[in-house]
Image (cartoon, rainbow over all chains, first blue to last red; front, side, top):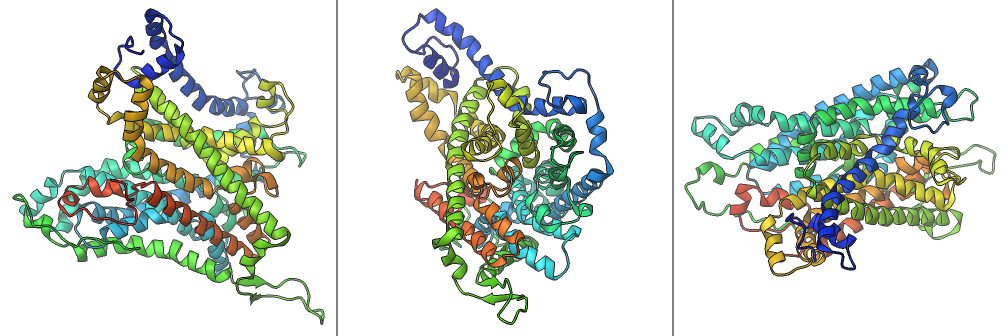
Length: 303
Length: 335
């Protein structure tokens, strides 16, 4: 039925078969086979980008035009981006908090996680599978079951509205994610490297420090981006552990934006804040997209 | 957790250095200690504390002599038995139903769309970079931002109503609020599943399909008998993680629709609101119940469907290949 499509993969073959069910002429089939994948690709890109595009467009309208539905804002205005930084929103401070918290979480996690990942990927020891199971199990842990008892603890020790109250709980999801990704990267490196190093008189520790770590730098870097994205997206911890705007992270602050009249939601400036929160991340992700996709797919499947 | 780890470092087969044969137990323990210590603090402690906390009830109101009551008193399993009666119980089961409903519907839709995306991408000759870039966009957008974005799209005067030319109050309550949450979640994660499935597709050699074609297999039976079984391991793990992620769903309904909306209240949101109202005992009880629910689902998934969660780690390690095949909790009974 689909023999007229020349491509070996069944994706388009199947699509072509589906579209020509009912027995069309062979020539027609191959024509469809030609453009169908492109239509599919266009559809995927539209699916992924249209809502995002709408966010950008909405952020670039004048405050009074917020509810316009033109596909291109006329006239362009950066008023929303100015409004975002209105002192009543404390958005600047929140951005700083987000960078600080997500950055610290990333650095701490990578330092601790690299050691663990190396052991899991490279060393022989009894409790290896148990350790792997524990780490993967912790990544399934529901955030709320951690936040509630920790909220009580942090209230008692007066950590509410502090950076450590944001950083420490975030390790609960960042650390398993980092260890899992890094383990995958370390595993991909040929074992001969360390063997050569140990033959040359390195201890296992030296082999790790002087041979493996420099070579794993790209993997560590990719993991850093993935962990940073996860930490940057964090919401429930930051929402629970803060009640002053000074310590809110940007994801929380943006949900507290208020309009001029109190009841209306300032969607224009919220969209602008969304763009500000997303675009630096996107640039980083897109520059290293190849590596990140490899990291996401090889290092398990945690989002 | 019977991990029948074979301690057997099997006799070295080839001319491997003594190196790969040693037990690096001490070094491994040293390297793993910081990670395990942190996990103990941020996960081990909280779950035990939550179980303990769930046995207490916050005193509320005034006692007979008119003093405001403070503190907590031990009430045993009262917080748990409360789910079987009264308004509180109804609210819990509603949240439980919503959680399950969102999980099942979202994951099913996401897997279908994700697999279709992967099939299309696998077929793409051009624009691979562009597709990959656009697929990463929903993934990289913070959930809260995407919730706000969809809230804006689904605003009464927003673009969604404009396109379908209806006046639906999406983010108020009811089925439309549920639909809004499902659409927003699907948008964000279906491409991600597509990415994972694509990785699984790309390792299937083209020869397999050629052979099938020569044998006269139709496209559909190729998909059913070749693609699906070969992609299944990767897909199962992806689905498991998506299920567990959706079972703890909080940000999206909370920001997109809001608090106190019965139609989208998940167990996480319910527990969070209880905590906000200083009913720490019942909040903890709900959190523990959610935790147990997740454990049961994960266990069933791994056992019944044989999702091999840590399989990658074991199989790909050159050393592990030399050891006796061993099982762990994460290994199902499928071959």
